[in-house]
Image (tube, rainbow over all chains, first blue to last red; front, side, top):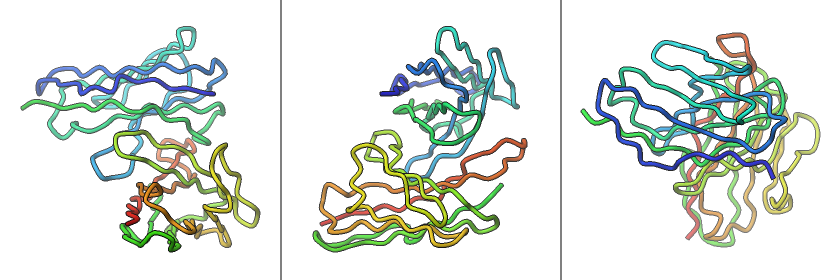
Length: 112
Length: 118
């Protein structure tokens, strides 16, 4: 049974600060890792994808992957109130976005 | 990015009735679509993978006779919840694979259908 674990939160971060979201996964053969943002009552939207160890930056978002530790994280710099949402970590055992296993999500609240 | 639509966006039905949910890819052809279910405060659980022109592949524990999937064209997949019961009340979301802005294959999600069974 493949598992993806996240701290459910809620995580509260002051506006302008860095929000740090963490995720661990059980399947050592996992190849692709994704962070999705889901607003309440809406469907998920892709924020970041990462496939190799290290950091990947896109604007205010940085994904970090450590396959040896089976750990992936998402940093959000200069947090904005619009970043308040549930962030879902998803993992795939293929090099692509197919058949995803999702974590339960971390609820993030940015405090103005 | 690619656009996926779902219809209806919400539906309320009586216990024992069947409900059909449509998932359409609006600006691309979708050989593969995925159907997920999300209960309140829980994550997305993959129910089945829908393949155009062939039978769907169901995840373990999902009753294929209860959740009927038809993918008759490259732009439409349907999920029918047969003999729905209150425990089937959930948020049903479809997705499809398409090329993302960075060149990777990306899952584009539909807006979801909220099903309430009375």
